[in-house]
Image (cartoon, rainbow, N blue to C red; front, side, top):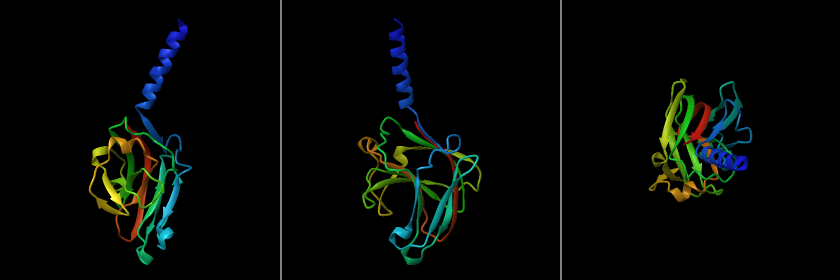
Length: 182
């Protein structure tokens, strides 16, 4: 009889865990294995870096438009992530001077379409925003394209991340506490 209750408990626990996935930069310092990719991969001169704070991870730098530059990104490692059971993403962050983007990628190749949503500037005040997956736009090589993310694509997420989202020179700074999928 006790094994039956234990089995029910384990199944219920797995169901509850599957319904809420979280990346916590503040409490658990998730993101130590994330990577910075700057436009230097294509000849640009932008700079970006990250550091952990008491509250989360700070991703900051300077965007340069010289040598066809214009972006800096902080992204997770490639790892299959099935988000099809979720309806939205919740991000607690603060930022200044620059609109940042949050990305969902389904392929390792940089030229394959991905999805992105804008994270508005908060004037360095903490904000928690909820974004339904229907609010993500399709992009290809930095240009907006027609299309919305499908349930099938949400099953195939390989990487999530943040990217400078404005094609303008200047400093950027964002601090992220957590990302939750619900």
